[in-house]
View 1 (cartoon, helix red, strand yellow):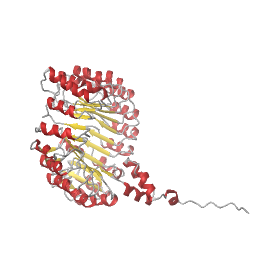
View 2: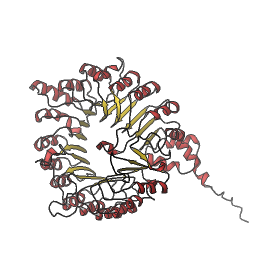
View 3: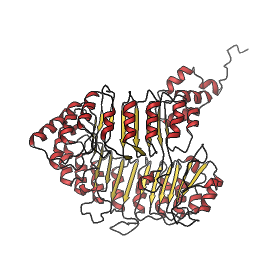
View 4: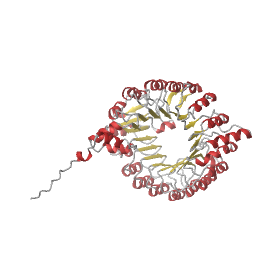
Length: 583
């Protein structure tokens, strides 16, 4: 007889069972939302533990879920990131009163998350009343970030400054704000000293430099300071002397005429900033004033020059002082010669963005071309993110770029003349983007432009297996183009299409895909209201919204926005936004 002890079979529940305290401590070490979401699917115990241990939640669409559902799912949240309007609101393609008001969320948070510490909003409507409510109802509140929001004024900022006694971060950037003056800055109490991040770089009116200097001198832990154009170089010099510990600086106007003594003092102040890694702003910088920043450049990893129209020689003089750059933003005024200087001086560069100095000036002489992007790729082999506005490009140039830099995760090429072919061969730009998706296996985001046929989308569907976001404008030949993408791109999360010949067949080709995506945007395409009704009927868990333009054909769906939701159709849509599922 076999007297050896029999092994007890282990059930799946036994294999995943840990003491709650241990499991919550382990889960607290996971920062990635994707990792946490994956963990929550293991079993009920892990789902519960992940729910109770979650402290931060990211919501990419404020209408994809209700605040009540979020509060039930995650009862101990301390930090919320919330996005509202579609990205095309940045281009005035979304009605001003579209929605995305944050106040209903704040009402729930005040009840369920009274110890909320951080709120980061993007493209949300935020009123002064909401900011005052926020300031008065969350005693531990520490960080507020508003990016591309609207509906509030500097009066709302005054409420935050007055009542948020523990505030460490106030980040106000690129908002549609009613700017009634800089008095809000004086609303911080005289004994207030906790700020670590202060960004008001995009406010327009003057602030009192004395008030700002006193605030900065009190906040000894301040690491990020980004001021607006009203701050003179004299004031900036005094701020730097008071806060040499800064790691990120957004400078104001750099066009002031300086005496030799003032220039030397400013240069000395920059030299005191031994930890500066990010430099932005520098509005309208002159070559002479720009040289004052040289002592702080050796440690810069990110240089944002997109607010000053530097010429090629000015950029070429600056870059040798920046050997550690990993991110660079410039205007196309630097020309191809300026980009050649990037390739020659920035071997560690990972990201470059080239914006148009004047997108409506078709005759700009020094704008960048295919030569510039090739020069960057030849000298910057670590490049993995590019946003490039230009007026001409060739298939061969793009193929060269991705051959030199095969690890692109983000490739955003914007040829500003719609339907522009390869300017040397007059052929479509299909092979350019074919080269991108064939070569760059890590590609996550792609923006295409130029003269493109359905062949481009066939390449994308076949090769872009890790792509999550695709932006398309003025491209394609037929519905088949979009069908290729929907059938082939298994990880697609966001699809943005404007001014393309895609119609109902293209729209309905994604029936099996949309519930795994965050959103679909289609404007100025050939989609009809009937096609939207079919989509809404077949996929009831989607919100299908149509934004009608005044005087447009009743049958035509001018702008279509489709997104998954567990909250059902929204109830705050204006008359110009039709929720098709309710028709």
